[in-house]
Picture 1 (cartoon, rainbow, N blue to C red):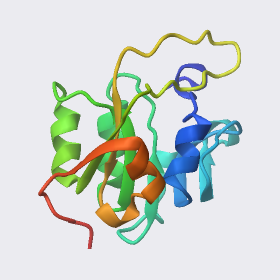
Picture 2 (picture 1 turned 180 degrees about the vertical axis):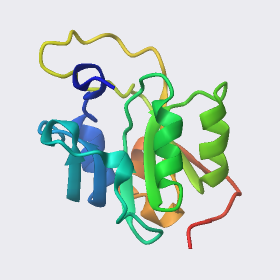
Picture 3 (picture 1 turned 120 degrees about the vertical axis):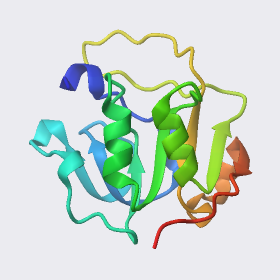
Picture 4 (picture 1 turned 45 degrees about the vertical axis):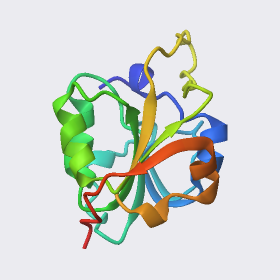
Length: 160
C-alpha cells in the first residue's frame, strides 16, 4: 500500500454529515473526519492492527482501494459499530460480505463522492457511485439520512 495512492480524503461535506466517531483507522493529516482516535500511515500507524476496536466502538472506515485492501479492512472491523464508505459495487466478493453485516445503506443523492487527492496526485473524475454501509441503523445521523437515499437491509444489527 502506498501513501500517495491510498491517502485520499473523505470530502468535508460528507465528513460533517456523518458526525463524530470513536475511531478513524484510515486517517491522515488532511482528514475532515471527526474522530476521538485517529490512525494514519504517515504517523507510522497501522489501522488494520488496532486491537482496541470492539463491538461497542463506533468506527468510520474509508479504506484504501488498492487491490485486496477493502476486504482486509472489512475483516478487521466487522465486529465493531462500523460505517464503511466504499464504492457501491455489487459485483465484488467484499460487497456481499459487507452488505451481509450491514443494517443500513446510504447512497448520496444528487452528487458524487469526489475524494480529495493527496498532494502531488492529480484528481480524477469519480465514475463510481459510493455508499455508506452502517452496521447499526442508529449510528446514521439525521444529516446523512437527509443527503442520501437509504434503506435497511433486513440483516439486523449483528454487533454484540
